[in-house]
Image (cartoon, rainbow, N blue to C red; front, side, top):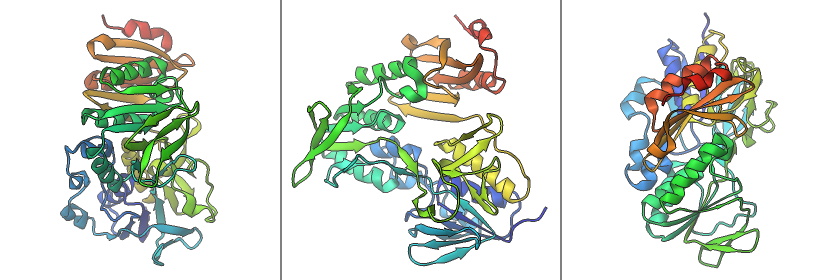
Length: 399
């Protein structure tokens, strides 16, 4: 099995680090370079909206590896220098500072960029939450605030709202969906999450469209809804989703479409791979293109890409998984919990604050969700793997 002489990983993310570590673990002894747009060594993003924002963790605690562990990888690490151009045929990346980095194999792990409101003004008090620096800046702002409006009813928006409310702030969450996380969890479970937030004092304005932000010469003062109502705010958190960070690839010749389009081996072109949030690859098990935005996928996909770089030629066919922690609730999802799926709670109950639910579509189990039921959810995952017939689900219910 022939290994490339050199590998360049573009993106000092959890996915990028997973590629580097997997390469070394699998015996790669060639030149290895990790290029990062941010000034920070690889760090963990899930704690940003929870532990860091709440002040429970110092920012340095998010680091994925200590300096000594990174040194053992014997790789060249370049930070604070974003990639600006990819030469596919020449296998070269040009950076903002003018560096030209070449390698036999290149892995794209540039992740996501937060979406902003149309015409979003750069007032003090308006924040997005994607990077470690974003989290530190937002925490500083929250400590001096009393009223917060969160624009966005997805995972990040609900996590930010939960953290801000736990800090004692008055929080209003605005979103276009009928309930929280409706597209990810469906209306039934999303309704339970909405009840959790309102029970903790969050004001929900769901099914509402944001017209604009409101401010003066000094800072943001509120959020104007489509009907004209203004929600007052000292701080506004814009959490309306993200998009793959692919602008720098527009003239590369790679196929782009909601990410870097790849084959089942996560290969975008000869010698070019993509991993993590930016990768849209062909999932052979589903027979469809898929792009996942979560930490677990980035780690697993990083290992799969490393194996394929080293010649193992394996399709990447994971069971999707994500989780969110809000207040004292841990929600975990294996598989797909679509908005239109059937849902049956098979263990526990919402009233007890612990339950597990199966999701089904086209006559098969497609997903499992656990609400403070970690072990049971993991066990029920097998029904997703086996695509259990939906007609059998009622027999799985426990009284």
